[in-house]
Length: 318
Image (tube, rainbow, N blue to C red; front, side):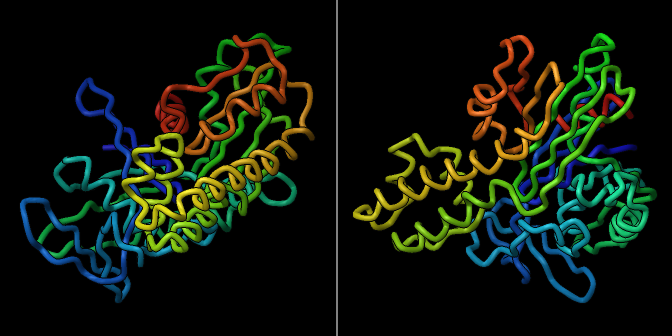
């Protein structure tokens, strides 16, 4: 079997074909460096890898930080990919996988594929992982694609020769921008910032939550960002309601700061006829990008599930 995996720093997004059906899955990256206690009906995923013990824990405030570029080659990245494969419900077996690297990692300074980083990613993911009391998949081969670019395949394949697509991919850790020619004939220009992502907001929100006596995981902070307009959700999750306004302010100010920093590199691109916004942070910036670019509505693309846009394109190309 072949799995197409966007192994982002916040979530693993995966797509594969099972029989005649295309399936998708999203698996959060929330792992701690110890095994979890087995209790209750839910399965426990306790992994041993490279001399360490890891377990999936969506609520632990001590979950390992994955929002950095080193995540791409880390031990916890390997564990997270295996965890997503197991969550597919498919019997563990030999598989081929296609994964991604941010543009700043996939390409070198001369905009050529960085063979060293690509091999490093492949070698990292070929390492076996052990599941306590169970079996894991054997990864037989690893293909690496650049992030953002494959997501535009469904749009550019039918474009006229003079049209082109600007793809803006905002993830948990990175911002990738690519200017793609019609029918994927070539890439006009790329931009990658490995230090700008939704984590900018996550860090500020976690700090505000801590001041509101709510020591949280990154996963909870991200849920608060997603539900930032839901007063009932905020009130339920924050312990010290007298500091609720502090959390609201952190959400608002960090959101605006994220938008400002994303629009700055977008301003350096020109000549595109269409724009597509993808990634886990798409909803946070889409309206501002639409206004900034000033295109007709039919030339601006934001899907209902922007987190899956990249694996959709990878799957279609593959």
